[in-house]
Image (tube, rainbow, N blue to C red; front, side):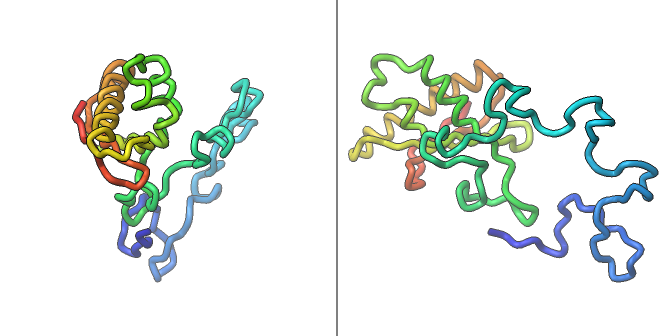
Length: 189
């Protein structure tokens, strides 16, 4: 994992009255003339934090180990995604696994039986790179034959491109890889 470089500009306010030029921290109430942190309940007239279970009617946080298909709850880290995020932390990948699995549940056909399934998709991560999207799907292939695995990966890539066009109307590139990290198919949508 890359370390935070002293020359990296990670959006921190590095101005200070201290002649050493060290990080001065976020502005204080005195510096801003008011409250410098996130809004409070009093300021918003309600709950200022993320939604609660009561507000959403269910679990409001990231998937738990029991909810996740493979027990891998939580956002990706540099080690999980590869490609790192540079000196300022992990890349801005978003977990879209449940959404894509739900789409698969509605769009898999009888011909897909035995080749791909909702459960074969272990992870779906998406991010924007400029004006286009980039996606990585990790799936568990039931096949020991590479050509059959590639055909299953191509079917997943095509379903993913249909999903992105239909739901999000965006463009990008998707790579489908095995759980071991081998890229089987890359497709543009």
